[in-house]
Amino acid sequence: MKDAWVTVLKRDLLLALRRRSDVATTLFFFLIVSSLFPLGIGPEPAVLSSIAPGVLWVAALLAGMLSLSRLFAADFADGSLEQMLLAPQPLVLLVAAKVLAHWIVCGLPVVVLAPIIGLQYALPNDALLALVEALLLGTPALSLIGAIGAALTLGVRGSGLLTALLVLPLYIPVLIFGAGAVAAVQHGMSAQAHLSLLAAFSLLSLVLAPLATAAALRISVD
Amino acid sequence: MMQWQSWSAFFNMGGYAFYVWASFGLTVLCLVWEVWALRKRSAAALHLARLLAQDQ
Amino acid sequence: MIPWFAWMAAVFAMIGLYVGFAIAPTDFQQGEAYRIIFVHVPAAWMSMIIYIVMAAWAALGLVLNARLSAMMAQALAPTGAIFTLLALVTGSFWGKPMWGTWWVWDARLTSELILLFLYLGFIALQSSIDDPRKADRAGALLALVGAVNVPIIYFSVKWWNTLHQGSTISMGAAPKMVTTMLIGMLLMALAFWMYTIAVALMRVRCIMLERERSSAWVKELSGVAS
Figure 1 (cartoon, chains in turn purple, cyan, blue):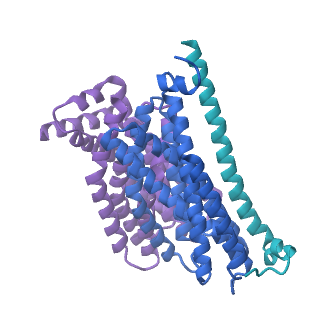
Figure 2 (cartoon, each protein chain N blue to C red; figure 1 turned 30 degrees about the vertical axis):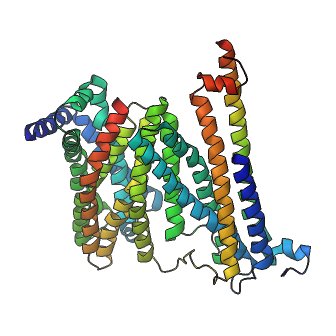
Figure 3 (tube, chains in turn red, yellow, orange; figure 1 turned 135 degrees about the vertical axis):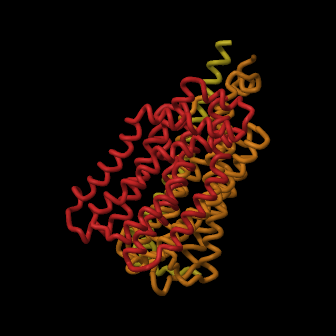
């Protein structure tokens, strides 16, 4: 069973590596969206640093959103998804492997790029650290919950936007606590509570989301 | 029990006429619209069912 | 059965409105504008109750693979969305004279807004899937995921709101509740509830007609011998 899990993980990572442009576009989107806000609002460092937590998190959410359609679509198109459904290994496990691959490919780069963009927003170092920690703890939840949306909208017209409509409300707690963590540090308080809640939410998602995703896949593919 | 001095006082709602009546009016409007739209849908569904039945 | 519920709705509405306008006294702080709560609060209550009932029907439909349960969930969604919208709009109309702005980002209004998104997502998903059975099951799963998330979302929004307190005033600062006010709200809530049942039954009938078009009982119903 562990072999199957590792196989799926490796396969997804390999495929993503071959289509490096997909990863790159997610990152570029994150970068571009983050650059739009100062252009729209003004370059004052004080203003930028106050909006930074929210803006960076929303940009991360949206960038993650874009990459969700790739989670299952390719496998669905070439029939390998059906094979996974028929496999003796529990679908939940295979789903978890795919989501982990997605997070490594799309979530982790955002975590790495974010502090650099945070510098553009005049965030002090402790806030930057809080940003990285929060994104690290929160982005798994984004991938996990996003997978449910991706699975529900498989093969549906206009699925990209529809997925966004379905998943963004569910992202709101992560957004609130993620941005809150950075804002707390900016105001001289500890981000401990926020980070703990983020971690708890990610853990809860880890337990429940793959189940829902597997159920959604069975509904969508059958 | 009636606490309104006159009908005009009632409609005026202590100066808040616009807000109060807009709220209630919108509520009534929405609910009436929903029922109307549903009746149209029902009629259309019946009509289509009739057509299909005739085709058989 | 539907006419019975429709009449009940009308009766409760008339009594409720009478209590709300004729019997309930003027509020000390908010004057007559507070009377908006006689639609705002019942609408908000209904928006939440309908979502729960919808999710329950959806769960039943998934577990028992029952078509009628799933159709009931589908039938309830639009009404729930309308009540959510009404709660938001009447909340705005209440907020403007009271607190000077058309919108406040307080915990309850913001949560209502997110609830509207959940409703719209459910409706959008179901209408975008062609196969009715698949649409039922996908929608049901979404409704359940949403239902599980609602407490989490509400908690986090509430927390977010307390963090940023300061100048914003909570919409929850309701007038000091006199019993007549409470009775008025309850009566209106009952009226909305009866209305919802009537409308949902009407809608589920439409859905059944639309889906089972070619079956024999529909042909009989439409008055053509099969």
